[in-house]
Length: 170
Image (cartoon, rainbow, N blue to C red; front, top):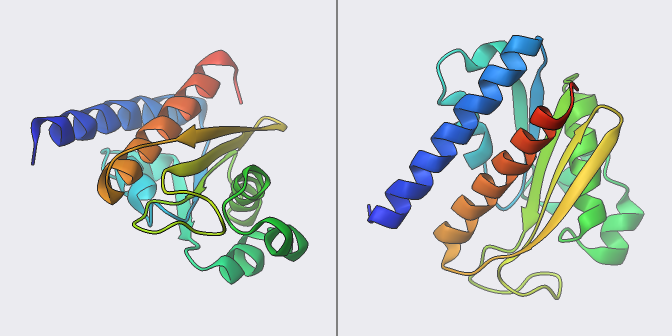
């Protein structure tokens, strides 16, 4: 593992620990919906001792049709824009929160590579957090290889989640 990869893993672990601590202290739970990260977000959160008090579960909806059937992402939205779109990320986060009965939903969708998808270039990523009656989506343009894009996506989502948790009680 390179020093950059080790640093990324350390940052993800520190962010995950703080997210789990904040959620646990509030008695709140989180559910995740992942596409390009393929379970990495759930793995980062559940690597923290005591995560079972806050993590309800997660869905890896890598295939587009599963976003509709498991997360209630509108089929019309997927047909019109494909799976890589900010509204899809928002719907995924909301779907995870509702389907898994959690206070917070978080989602990732995008293109890790090596090839473009749905007309979107490699590194196009959308992350979303749904909590407290609002859903926030960030658009990312990441660079690097497939692994670097996936790790950066998890890190950025944990940062978004932590920022939202710090700013208000959800």
